[in-house]
Length: 303
Image 1 (tube, rainbow, N blue to C red):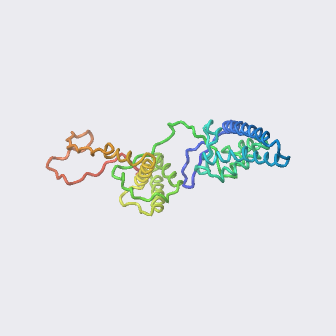
Image 2: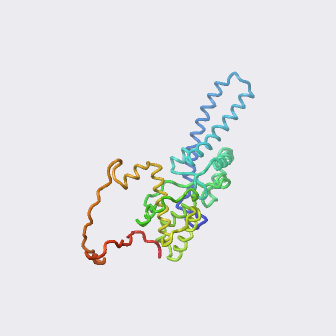
Image 3: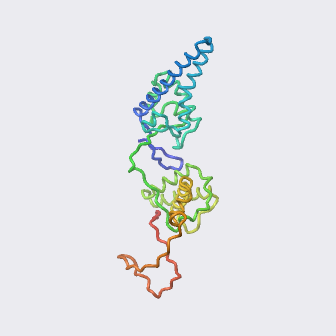
């Protein structure tokens, strides 16, 4: 596996596709495209029987540029890098930084594919993929793209650790529209792997990411909040906003106040629990009740 590293020295969990899977995807795409091209050519031949030779030739060139060249470009643009063959093989075309491709990337890949795949019968593409460390053909080099595998074992993914409960909802008014995708990716990669880092390296990395995030949002890091906990809380806030946009605000509100439209759950009287092993003794009954205990959290940022 050839790992992809961002400018923040964060390793992306992307797996470049190998030549056999890419070749199979290209064969599936070519079979579908050329079958459609033959059908359209037959229909045009029947429909343009009464036209002169120049008009027939112009229609033939237009149909060639539209179907074998234009259709793959349009499909990759609209599907963000997933053609029919890539969908069947579990592949996707992405940018070098792991982001989705756009029209210019698909246009460069399609234009170079005419020479690599159609005119040379795939010889140039195979040689370039074998020479490249990431299995990229010439079109990928010019477009700045990479074909990666999407179907990976699910046990390799690491969930983002939840933030401390006392930070949940604290950044609900934060403006996250100016935070770029590469910074979100760097923060997520750090949070999922901070347990594997050295304590000093992890602290410096979390401080740098927190400073970058605060500069993008325009709100400084709150005093007394560890950088790693701050990053986890902001990521949790972004995930909550995405969930509200996807499923509606009623679903998010139901998780906090109970059924939609129903009353809030009644508060239960506090229960006295026996002291646990290894924990401090219970608070005496005559102790002042207005002293708030510090919030407990399962989030353990690096020391």
